[in-house]
Amino acid sequence: MAEEQPTTTLVTPEKLPSLDLAAPEVSESTKEVLPRETVTETNPPESAETTTKPEEETAAEHHPPTVTETETASTEKQELGDGSSSQKEVAEEKKSMIPQNLGSFKEESSKLSDLSNSEKKSLDELKHLVRDALDNHQFSSISKPEDTNNTPEEVKIWGIPLLEDDRSDVVLLKFLRARDFKVKDSFAMLKNTVKWRREFKIDELVEEELVDDLDKVVFMHGHDREGHPVCYNVYGEFQNKELYNKTFSDEEKRKHFLRTRIQFLERSIRKLDFSSGGVSTIFQVNDMKNSPGLGKKELRSATKQAVELLQDNYPEFVFKQAFINVPWWYLVFYTVIGPFMTPRSKSKLVFAGPSRSAETLFKYISPEQVPVQYGGLSVDPCDCNPDFSLEDSASEITVKPGTKQTVEIIIYEKCELVWEIRVIGWEVSYKAEFVPEVKDAYTVVIQKPRKMRPSDEPVLTHSFKVNELGKVLLTVDNPTSKKKKLVYRFNVKPL
Image (cartoon, one colour):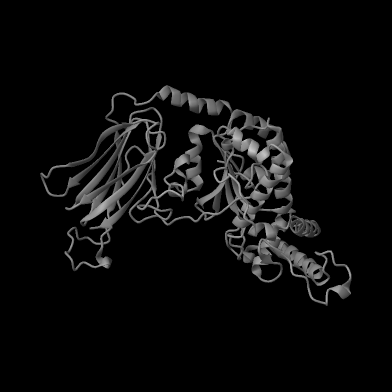
């Protein structure tokens, strides 16, 4: 897969800023299954004991469940969905030639100790120029030395004072990398950015209480697997004519839109870690589903202005730029602008059509961090989900065509087991049952076999009180001719 580049506004693919996401630790009780004919993976319990002690058992003696994931042949005789339509969808994406790999990209280290000798030299030279500029008040409009009281000028960018500590070095490195470590060009860019920030009154803007209806258009949610915050841009929201006109119908509204986006970006950037080795870039996701396209002149005008500001004043803030639900017209647009993009910019881009969007996001973002509407398990922060949080990691399994996947959770103590499960696109059968450890005991049906359609609820949540030792079996039967992505997670609550 390829990768993308910078923005937190509606923008073209090349230049946009992004946000942050922390990679959750993998739970000891879950593992990812490699797609093979038969796969069984087991995490042994911390103790070999299979019986639980009564009340005197301490928290340290708690035995977590063991998880086994097993693949067998499907038992269904007929497909649940139109397999041919699924194949057609995949074929159409291939036919539209969505770029799948635009080159590899490894983010440059923000550790100052990792810089090459030539890069360290460039950084030292830039710092020397900045020191002279601060001493002589070259960043401000004051030109007479007697008006400065011989006090060095103080300049902050994104809340970080220049040359005060190592965080300033990370800031200066962004300008150097944006200009290929050409010191004079980097210094000129820095001075222009400081000038623009003062004219735009950025520090005052950050504190303003601006009102807009764009919380569903641009929002931060979770982190990617490497800890970068993730910013989502949902272009399809502008199909709402009322929202579109309220945002872009005249110059005053477009100016307000730009101010709200800059404020959003500034506040997001100030949450990043500018220390040496910290995460100071953002993963950008652009949802192109039902996008108005480039025919809307008001949108095109606002986008052009936003891109120019971001390009000139927010260097190196995008780790990757992922475009999902990509329509045909965007590919035409990319074909036009692609030749003008640098190989480095192209290498940050990731493209995915509708049928592969969730799978593509999971490559970079863990399912528990991905919003439900994009195939993950994470609900809107405004919604209530008392059983799970972003910190509760999920497991992924690829259920191959014509196979059945069973997740076996072995319980070693009395508890309440709560789990979430979803299959992207469903079109499978799902059942859940509890099998007691005692020989000849009856199996308890938690969820009888249910044929799940794409229109069914995306995530199923179940709970079961376990009063005896045994195992919970979650089974997904995929009779279709298309592989499916199964995602699940669970929590244990002692009784």
